Image 1: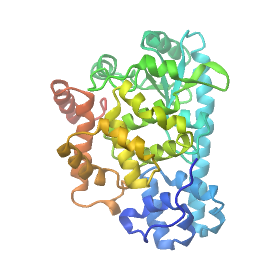
Image 2: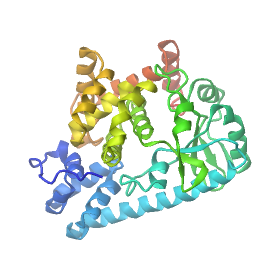
Image 3: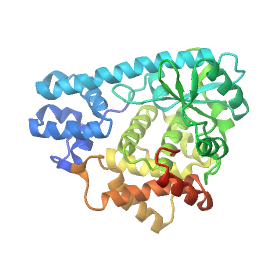
Image 4: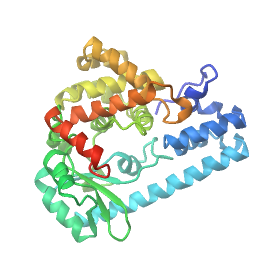
Length: 369
């Protein structure tokens, strides 16, 4: 995995403190206690404190951090380590439950990063296990999971219809005894979305985990595209910076292999995901200085939106990718985040369905997201 730049940027201000620390973790021991106080609060809000601790620890600098902030970092790493341990065990329970399924079982997102021991996994927080199976196997997979203790946490008629008729996943499931959460997917975008990636291609290219022919993770290019698609179609402001940091780490890690870059743009076009890839490359470069070959950047322009749309996205993302902490906000930040939230829903659902759905959410806030 290519290392992060060693030459530090100018001293950060409050709005750039967390991004600076993530980009230049070697500068962390020099932070003052007031800077650490703010940095820890910012990192907690962004669910990135464990990741920051992992970056500092990987450079052998954890012992050089002042005692008080070091204790916070160590605690965050322990919490993340426990989550990763639980996720590994939970994946095996899912694997056991779905063993009769004559189909691949693909682990997605945080649990997949943990199974693969990717560099972005240490310190990362995630709260559920995401699994993808072929749509033709969805009903059987749901039944098998129910037989092993998982059940839907969305019980209203509206929520059940919302997920089963329109979405790319079933209603979230929770284990009756362990209370662990599971999302069962059949694609990476809703049925109603503007773009329609071919789930069969994703499943066909998925790679076996540890010699297990059934248990798989997405291929490297597809993993990046899924991460980009999730980020730019969810509109979830709290984890926007964390998800962009994931993309930076994935691109650095997989990008060490030239073969990864050679087919990335073409794969995005095959899956109708050229637009989210373009945004992913643009904003990881801007915020984390992610090293991307110039020819890949040039090819990715195939997914570039019109000039006005791009200018609007730049304006929104400049605030949407800020640390989700009051110290990083200005008076336009809430409006920018709300606009990105609405945009994400608009890409996922046509207006004639989106407007009634948003109205329903307004008056039934505990309903489907």
